[in-house]
Structure formats: structure tokens, C-alpha cells
Length: 321
Image (cartoon, rainbow, N blue to C red):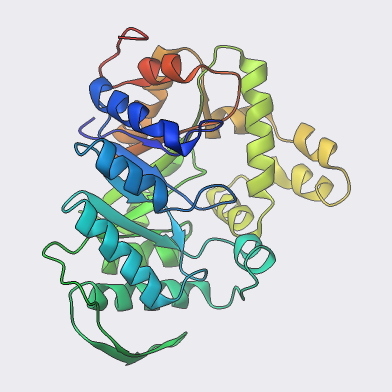
């Protein structure tokens, strides 16, 4: 693998303690750190810490939603990161979900495809330094120009699940960000994007040989997301509808029954777990099938961070070395 990333920030570790871990990542051969925005840290601050603590790392948002910031503020934050880490920062954007946009941020989850497309086009113009005075389908920008000129505008990536958004990523962005898929799903997804694009794949990892503990953690994570409409539709498109129907049916009334209804084979397909060698081999399958930048995201399952990072490292190292 030419590049191998880790999702940050790490669970149960204060951001103030992260700099030494970013240096450790470099020593272990990791090339990237990527963030998301869920209900923990924001997508930019951990990257700013990484950019200064470990200048060798490439950094990226994977992703920040297009609804929860205005277009101008999103451009300013992206420009700030690109200036802090010139040539090392990538901006990943996406629609996110109705839960994050409407329930948590008092927004309206309308026309997600159009909003992502419009934001992508606005950012492409704004980050080039031109004045933007444009009425898009989903918003209007009047007279915006970045006050700090970027010598190296960041590449723009689009998070996508189904064909229309995947094709948008292929046609108008520099790469696509995918998650919640099995290694065997990657060729179908990449075929919609088309050739020549970076493919960032968030891969959920439980670094433990305790299969039952890994499956329990995996079920909790999958149930929390696959009952959200956009992810449910994605897995129906991938063909997992029959396997997940019992979970979807139980979820509104009985959460425990919904968890129990997720088959082991679905958990094992979507969650990487096992020995370090088994985990590395599973991640390699994603790469062999078309992911160009694998990004491991550890799920809470009782692992030790140092041991887990060493076990997954591109160049396996001795813990504490």
C-alpha cells in the first residue's frame, strides 16, 4: 500500500495528548490521518494538531457536512487548513444524514445531491481565489472572495454511497470517500465513480481475536448507522436488504432484538477483526479491489492503542519501539 491512514481523534484520549501519537504514526509507516464529524470532535481541529505535530502526515476531512456550515465559512476553514499544511490537506465533503443535519443541527436535509454538487462547484471556484457571485440551485453567494490567496488549493473529495453521488464524485471531484462497505462491494462502487480517481475507504476495525467481543462492538456500530435512511438505502442497493430486513423491522420497537437480528456474516463482512495478520490481510483486500487510501477506524472493543497501531502498521513494529 502506498498510503495507509487512521481515523482520528482516538477514543478516550484527550486531543492535547495526540501530538505524541501523531509522531508515533509516522514512525510506524502510516501516511494519513482523516477525520469525520459525528457527535465528538469537529472535523478540522484534530487535523490542525496533526499538521503541526507531524508534518510528514497527509491530512483530510472524511467528511464535513455541506449543511452545517455556510459555503463561505467552509471555504475559509478549508483555506486555513491548506495554508497550514500546503500540499498535504484534502477537503472531503458530503451530505451527511438527516439525523446529523436536522435532529442535531436544526437544519433541513433537502436536495442532498444538489447541495453537495453546488457546494463542490462553489468551493472549486472560491479556493482558486476568484470572486464568487453566483446563484446555485440550493443557495446563493454574493461577492465572496477569500482574503488569503492559496498557492496550492486543496483537492476536493466527495463522500458517496449510491450511483448518482458516486458519478458526481467521478465527474467533478478529485476523489471519492466511501464507508460501511465490504471489500467485495468496492468494485461495484468504484465502477460508478470511473477510472483515475482516488478512493478513500473508511474501514471499521476491531483489533482483537475475541470474535464475540468484536461482533458485539460491530453490531452496536452497524445498528446505529444502518438504520439511518441513507445507509439503509445503500445496503439495499448493495443487495443486503434480505439480510438486514429483520433488523430494520425490529429497530423502532426493540433495539436489543434489532442488534441480535444482524447476521454474523454481515458483521464479519463490514467489520475487520482478528489477529494483526488477519486484519492487515482484510485491509489489503479493500486495496486490491480498488481503494487507494485505506483509513482504519478503530471501534471500541477493549484494545490497547499502541498494540493495535503496531499490529496494523504497514511495517509491523514491536509495541513501544
